[in-house]
Length: 170
Image 1: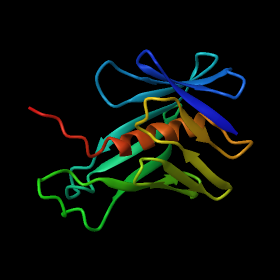
Image 2: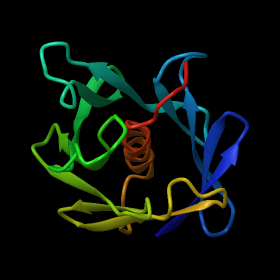
Image 3: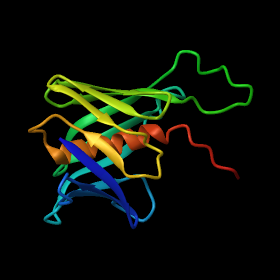
Image 4: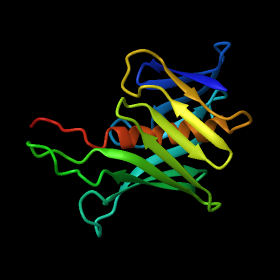
């Protein structure tokens, strides 16, 4: 199934091939990383967030969470390239992947390409996301009979990973 991801006003809209709205991804609060996956019926299906792990070293100190009705569904850890220190100018390391551990002991693997496209490897197949930073609508390909709201939550986790190496001038 191919889903189109469109930019709305402060939100992402997920529509099917016929143009029907399936889900919306919206910030949970005005400031902060929390995002809510909202169904077409207006009900919050999943919530995502970033946790800072203070006991870990830099580059390993973040964990992304996906929860449903207050219960943890999945945790995700970004993966970094082994040669992260090859820049002439100091920069945060660029995540090259993501390991998503579902609560039912199933592991999903996200692989980022050099052109910012993403492949999601799951036991039932493979999902793909076109260029994440494109100004055009993105295409999200998921296996048929998949939970669309879970995939929108995973899309939010991928968004956290893609922005992990952002730098902000001060």
